[in-house]
Length: 572
Ligand SMILES: Cc1ncc(C[n+]2csc(CCOP(=O)(O)OP(=O)(O)O)c2C)c(N)n1
Image (tube, rainbow, N blue to C red; front, side, top):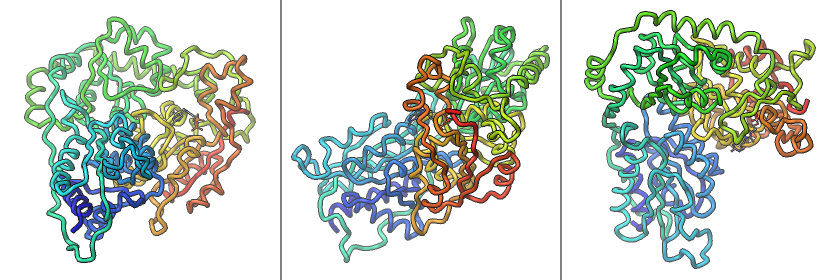
């Protein structure tokens, strides 16, 4: 057997033994040894393999599968195979999101032998193992007779590193690059044995240790005038923390993709309440924070309020061993304090009273709701120049983003929510007991790769998914609609809020009148597209939904497709 085939087979064997079950492959010749090994293991039913032409989409598909696996309770790394050269760099957006979104991704990047580096050889980067920043670890495996033995060790280590060692004191899961140099020949020989894999194993995880700060500060804090703030928690379910907060009737301020959204004491549209009820905000003594809140300046202001005790909770609490958890509760759990019901009721009342009269316009028109995840100036705008207020339009007006989001999230199921205004519309309308679970890519909150991520999420979790995103986001990731010729449509409904551009910028300082000359071309980026032809060109069914009833009907069918929802155009 030639060296490259032996190396690739050893590597794939080790991945199987370490519990990897999903691989996404992009085509290429240098990566062929890996491709053949993966294809053979898939043919034997040991791996699920998908093929994507564009490595950027391949990376996001893998990321989505990893997130879906996590949601289904089987956190495990997903591998993505690319050839050498610029193909590797196309993985970078997904690698970055995986890094900041704490998802286990293995970038298996094929390379030429090191002797060809810096010689001008075709498709050869001087150091390909440095192309992907923000990986948890990178390996550069040289070609040669001992490569196969090394590959097995390195692959097993890469899997462990990508899974992290738990959040408490260790590093969270994330991407790892395994750069593998392959020399010719790159294909198996006809005489090579065709059943070469060892037994496939389960991925066993060590229980995560409980962060001592949780026992020392978080549990006692439950007795104070405490509130909880939930950001995106990387797809982890936080059931233990959610249970404790519910038992202590703690008012919960949560972003849509936070697992705390399911709290019975959720303060709906909480940024409005934070703005309007400084008196309540001042009274909070302790704030328990889960995950990464990124959506609003109001949350950031709250976090930096002088005198507030902020307790950040490790998101993987559910993976702490049961005995350790019980011991911690026995040792430090306080009584539910007298007065707790009045405290929580004050927050829930505020949510009811502050909310209704502020819901007439989409976020970008409301005096520049400050967005924390953009490079923005938090200054409020008095005179947004570029958006019509739908409240002023007649009965034939397009839907508001909020009404559309409420309709998409109105039936039980899983919603994958896009960045930009989509997540903010949803934030405004999700109430306690909303029938959906919500996931998002909030590691870096990019508008890229969302279609592939949602498709991957559906595959990894085994659940049908509704993706809600903006038109620019869909155009950015339109290549995610492309699938293999024989691949069935995934169980994904794509709801695109088409306002012909990036509305979010109108709510930032870019919407100010004195900047109006530059706004349309450089920020709104109106494109004049609708999605019928694009969807059909990629082999997806397509429909327009103009009313909440039409959105609801589309949701009820569950039929995969692109559903376009016209909303008020950015440029009016
Ligand atoms: C990969 C990436 N490129 C650029 C941005 C900056 N950005 C943030 S929102 C946005 C416009 C999004 O428009 P759309 O998806 O239509 O949503 P809307 O703002 O209309 O809600 C852009 C370009 C980003 N977040 N991610």
